Amino acid sequence: MNKKELNEIKKQLKYENETLYLKGIQEGYGRCNDGEPVVRFTRLIHGDTLEKEEGELFFDIFKKSLSGTYGKNLIEYGFDHSVPESKALQETFFAYKNGSLLIKEEFEQLVKDLLVKGDYRNPVYITAGIFEYAAPALNKNNEILEENSVFRFMIVAISEAKLTEIGLFYNHETNEVQRKVNDEMQIVTPPLDAFLYPSFSGRASDVNHFLYHAKSAKKPNIDLIEDYFHIPFVSSAPEQAEGFAKVIADIFPNGMDTKTALKFHENLADYIDENDNEDSMVMMDKTRIKDLLVASGAPDENMRFFDSSFSKILEDQEVAAVNLMETGKVSFKAPSISISIRDDALEFVRTKTIDGRPCLVIEMNDGLEISGLPANLLTPAKAIRVLPTQDKQEADAQPSLLESDTNSTF
Image 1: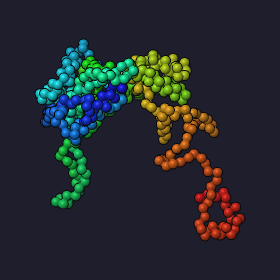
Image 2: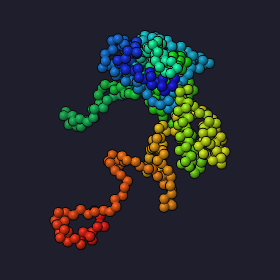
Image 3: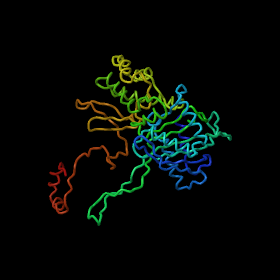
Image 4: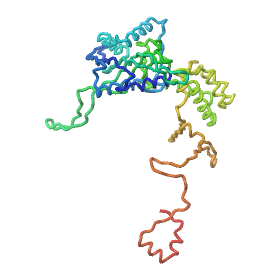
C-alpha cells in the first residue's frame, strides 16, 4: 500500500459518497481496573440510519485514523504465519472486516482485548467501521475503466476520553472561587491508536497486511504492537533519526560540511521520489546509505569509519528513508538561531566568510516579511531628522541649520 493508494481511501471517507457504502459502526467505552477490562457501553449503528451531523463526526475520526506520514506514525505491518497468535489474529481480522465485528459479542471481545493488551491506563472510546468501496479499475495509463471491484475494509480507532474542563467560577454558598469540571467525558481526536485492515494494494485487498496509526511518531504503543498484533517492535522513527544523527556525528567529529549535507538531502529526496511508487515505505540498508553519502561528496577519510559506526549504533537494521531527512525543507540550527528553507529555495543559499567569520548567506527576493510585517533588506542612504512645525519655520529662515543637521538621526 503506497501513499497514493492510502490517499485514495482517505478521500472516500466522507458522509456523502456514492462509491463508499458504510455497513455499520460499533462504538464502545471502557477502561481497565486493576488489569481487568470493564466495558461500560457499546452501541451498533447501521449505516443507513446514521444522521448527517453524527455521521460527519464519525467520519472525522476515521479520516484522522489514516493521517500521518509513512515510516513515522503510519506503519504497514504483515502477519507472521510462523507465529500461531499472528495467524489467528489475521483470521479474526478477516472475519471482522466481512461483518462479524458488527455482532455485539464480537465487538465487546475486541474492546476487552484492546483495553488489556494496549495497556490504556485511562478510559478510552473505541470506534469501528465496516466499509465497502467500489474501487474503479485503472488501465496502464491510470485512466478509470467502467468496471470496478469491491474493497471491503475496517477501521478501528482508539481515542482518549477525559473530563472536560470549564474553568473557574464563584460559589455563592461557600463564598469561594472554585474550579468547575463537567461530568461528561470528552472524546479527543485524533485517535491514540488506529488500524486499517486489509491494506489496499494494486487495486485489491492485501489480506496479509494492515496499516497501523500512532497519534505520535515519538510514542507508538509498543504494548499494542507486541501484545495484540504479535509483532516484534523495531525502533521508532525518532529513534532511527537520532541514531543516524549519531552515526554522522561519529564519523564527522567536526560536523559534515554544508555542501555535502545539502547534496545528501537532495540525493535522498530524489531517491525517495524514484522509489516511492514501488513500496509503501522506502527502506534503505547500510550499503545504500553509504553509497548515497559518497555520491554526495563525503570524504573517504570519514567514510572509512561508516560501516563500524552504523553497525554499532543502528545494529545494521534497515531504516525508513523518510526518517533520515526532513520532508520538503532543510533546517539550519545553532544556539539561539533557527532557519528553515524549502527544498525549492536551496539554490539561494551559500556559505561565505565575512570579516573572518563563517556565514550563511541567503539571497532574499521580493515579498520579504519580518514578523509578519512587509520589509526589505536595503539600508537607507542617510537618516533624516523630522522637525516639528515651529522648528521647521525657523529652519526655513535659517538654511544653515538644515545643512548642519543632514547627518543627524532620530
